[in-house]
Amino acid sequence: MTASLEAIARLIGPAHLAVGEVARAANADVFWWPRAAPPLAVARPGSTEEVAGVLQLLAASRTPVVPRGAGLSYTGGMAADRPAVVLDLARLDGIALDAEDMHATVGAGCTWEALADALRPHGLRTVLAGPISGSHSTVGGAAAQNLPGSMEGAIGLTVVLADGTVVHTGSGGMAGRSRFYRGAGPDLTGLFLGDCGAFGIKTEIVLRLQPIRPVACASFALAGGAATAGAIVALQRAGFPGRAFAMDQARAEDAGKVGVVEALRTAASVAQAAGSIGQALGNLAGLARARSDLAATPWSLHLTAEGVSEIAAQEAIALARRVLHDAKEIPPAVPQALQARPFSIRGLVGPEGERWVPVHGILPLSAASACLEALVAALTARGEAFAAARIRVGWIMSATGPHVTIEPMFYWPDALDPLHLATLSDRNRSRFAGRPRNEAARRAVEEARAALAGVFAAHGAVHAQLGRFYPAPEGPLPARIKAALDPDCVMNPGVLGLG
Image (tube, helix red, strand yellow):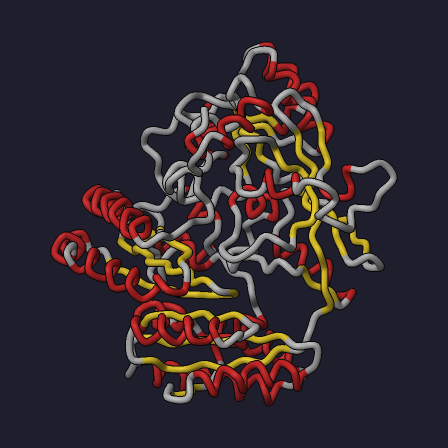
């Protein structure tokens, strides 16, 4: 162990520093990156001060540093091309709630589910909706990667720079001020959001809160991807104030492949949310009817609308019904179940333990339909290769504002990594472990993802989670900011095309 690592062990405690094969296992990712260098070590500091101390120790030797959240990146966010010390921020999981001023300061390692559980007794939730992977994915990971849609609900940050300097953004960066406001001078919060750790290590995120509001849901069956994209665009242009989430038939069938225990858990959750067992059982029966309807149609569209009152939420759904007057309405069991249980990691693998990886693009409304058509054509051309490698494709489209996110997802039988296995139940771990590597499928998926990224680029898409996969920001400004904040290019070198 080098002198720097020995000093880090003294600072954070030897139990919180892993090296060698232990470090490799501790740095597992959801995707494979064969060109990534193995980590020098994985350090798990327990506070902002310890993060600053670690960076100060490493600065003298110009040792690269890579931040880690839950390891769910599929764009090479942690795949540095040179050995680095990985800072695993899982221990930074504190929550400081200011209910009176409607914000919370959250440690970067806090999961979205833990945060939601802490806020619920106060009748509060974050304005920024966490991802469905929030049972494992962290608030810091979202801040580093960005979420499709908007990060406006993040109103301040604590960031440690490459030399160990600690900075606070938003109103919290002003002496004596509360952390209640983002726009206090230049928007330095936005500077560090979505940087994948290239500019600094985010240790705390300040999130705007709002009351938990009444919700109304609706679901519709649509006759294909083009019709679904058109429906989502029409809803956004009409000002639908909620979330639209669509699945193709294959993806919907995957979502429906749950056992009796899981179905009963969902029913119980819905019962708790609805306040009645009878209503829950009715919703569960609705899920069965919805599956029957989905068998006859290629896509389903699910809408969720919040309102200051139940009447306001229902008015938003009434607007959607007017916009989608030609679509067949089906029981809204899927959005109701997602409301009751918004977080799950089960989707990290397919329903039969298949390997899974997506690719996505965020598109202007005018480009969504044409981009979807081009994506389908690009995948259709790979039909024989996919069949040979046993690869199948599922689709999701979603919108929470005047843009559409399209997300093709690849599934295939393959060896699972420790990260996948750790998220599975004991039963499924024994079922799915020990499978051989499917090299042909991995090559085909890599080629297909690259091709689809090109299709997205041709239609003007942008992306969350840029990492080392999607196009980097253009122009001189990112490089100049990098040079000012990290002149030795030690902060996640190579990410965003920097360093």
